Image 1 (cartoon, rainbow, N blue to C red):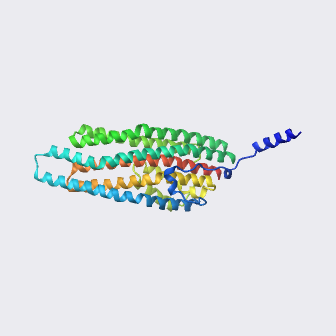
Image 2 (tube, one colour; image 1 turned 30 degrees about the vertical axis):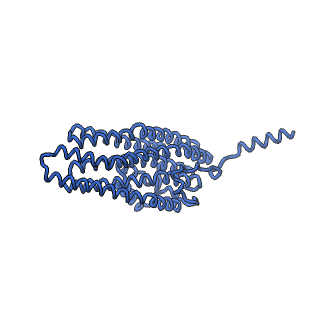
Image 3 (cartoon, rainbow, N blue to C red; image 1 turned 45 degrees about the horizontal axis):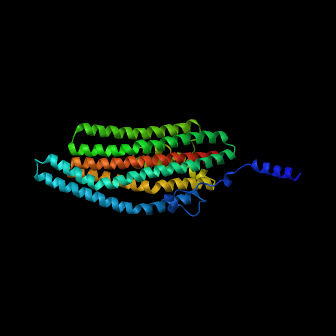
Length: 346
């Protein structure tokens, strides 16, 4: 009889319904630990803490980028000065400019490419840990069908996007830079066209992937919400103008992000969202600063008269834009998915 009572107690303990509060979000990646707040009870306060910590961490990158761009501009000015006295050395000066600028920018660019690939990998790995927890939380509240549809779609798109970035887009950035260097050194139009075609293919690939993902969420009915129209308009204009390549897509999804603060009710959702943002924040800010400053340097070099040199510097800036778009695409996928889970939890 005693054994029967023990068996009954065990069975009852197994069928006790789970709650979102019983679940624990996976620990943020090591690279994001220093940015995470000690308390995660309020999404708005936690986000403010993460943003402030991220800006402080990214501040040294601004000084380094300014130094690098100043050196690039000095090289362009020297080359323009030499060109004004050596009209018969166009090819030699073009090659000299390509060598000097590539020597200055290639090393740091390679580091940024590796950092962006590592960040995408960390985001994808964290998503594989977070999404099952969010799925269980939503299913425990009676949203089993929505949880299955949302988890299935997000898991597939996350795997495809991270794999495409790691195995296809990152190597394409190297190929793009190689073509840019060859085009700048030789001045061949064929290489210029190949470079532009490669860039267009990479950017369109990212856009199509995000359009398909947001379309899937819309069809399944998990995207939606309402936010203050003035805030929504301001967010869309800011995101669309500042983020290259995928800015318009992020702007279209900004309403879902804006309402997230009001939808997140559990420590699981709060911690998960903050961990995603903290993981992507510093690499994205650093690459964004480099992107903007290189574009500004290219514009200044063009005004000085170094057209070929300005084009090469602009190509390095375009590579930074690709890296920023990759990182933001992966983080956007996880952010929207987590918010949609929280919306389903009510």
